[in-house]
Image 1 (cartoon, rainbow, N blue to C red):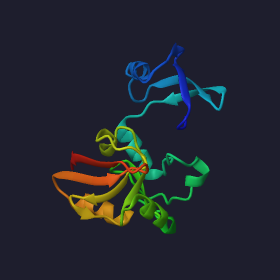
Image 2 (cartoon, one colour):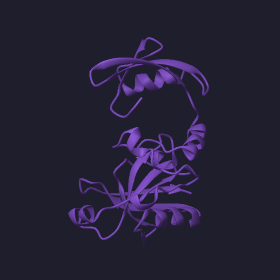
Image 3 (cartoon, rainbow, N blue to C red):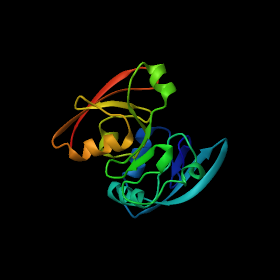
Length: 184
């Protein structure tokens, strides 16, 4: 199941809203197998899925790169498969502990948004700390606790060193400024 798919039913129970999806999934536990009918590009598909806990999803993401919010699986298969890994020259870095995929911000993006620095959050694992804080993919972190960040490694290092509360300052691609606070 990919971003953009429309879930039609769980075990033949129709799903017409996010709350109905949550209601159906809440009936099961991690490890349970569910049958999901979904719509992709106008065609219906059925898959048999095994539900995972957030902890299992994070462990799995440490072993393999999870899909970016904007690219398909083939384009993401270049990431190395180590804990808190990096794909090197592309500037993409995954931090499994936070459940995010980070990337450098292009000069064009910096100029277009009128910012001097930043790190883009490309994708967020549902249920992760940053997801629960309300951050959406595409958010560009410009500072952590008032300290400017310039690249994914720098942000990761600051997050690992920071104890207690964290304030992220940043901007979305549409120019909206946003601030997020959470405990570390």
